[in-house]
Image 1 (tube, rainbow, N blue to C red):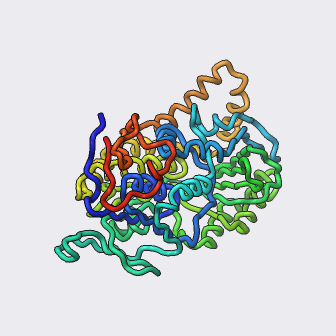
Image 2 (cartoon, rainbow, N blue to C red; image 1 turned 45 degrees about the vertical axis):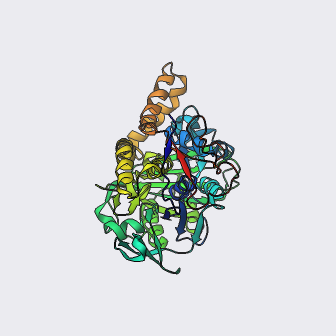
Image 3 (cartoon, rainbow, N blue to C red; image 1 turned 135 degrees about the vertical axis):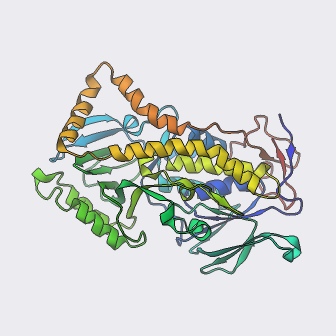
Length: 461
């Protein structure tokens, strides 16, 4: 049933600062702008980061993308992966399966490069949202006094820019969140290591791959090379099992040294593993998009404190092992923005509702991450040979469809472990909401397409 909801302020839009311009931040900015908020996004990097590996959009995240009006953009930028294969030490394909089976994708699920998704979100929001690149938050001080005509909020200082005051601050700045550190304390108290590390980087496509991914396993380590549609380069992934290691996540030289140590004996001779591994290690050193991090969960009792709230990996990182981090970021942005749109002047009601709606979804995907992190690498060559045998015979078995369904079911359970509300949508000056009660499919402000004037928005439930 349609109705009206009081806008954030009768005299001006409520101001929100979002830290992080990857996926969660711009996705939240998209929704908040459409709900009449004045949004600023600050990003430490000097420009939009367009690197990264491929990410899945599944289940509830597909529905969110459709409500945002970006699903067609995602489909056009799809990796269009065709097959995945395991290879032996000589690089010979042992078992080849459809890429959708490897990715546990069904129906409208899709896959896109993280950088392409970041670009889509940025292009959709840049005209209506203030982006500040090359800067970072240095302090957050909440004010709840009678000064400044009674206006409470958060005083924010930056590394470069002048201090500013905002009504709300959102940390959408990833697993190593600066906002989380400033508000809740050191990262170490929230991290749970899942026993492995992963690295990703670009490299020349010397294997001539065409929308195919190749995997090679040795005890405790897994490597992958793939190419996606429209990208002349290839991507490399190296994963290895290890207890938690000491290093600075902003010091790539140390990370490269750890990667070299983990794979130093692999592929040096044909009998020691895939002979592509030394080339992958060289490519990692040469890449300008080198990424290295642990497979880890972020676990917190609360995602908000005062007028600060965390979103995406900053709040509940499920690690790349879950395959759900990007989808959780999109869904979380939708949920948080919707709750802020219907909440009263104080944000705690919205933050509580956001957590209540997301907690079960996060818990299911954390459990998946723990399971998959253990399964990514095998302990012995015997286990690896058994895995290869099962994959080789799978296409010829009468129960292959049941196996494929079983593989997908676990991932799909995580992808669909939330029921999305039809949150209120900003309506045009006429006061008429879309008939469905959902956000317009165009992904742009209604009516004239201009941002609403201060104090003008109305809302429909």
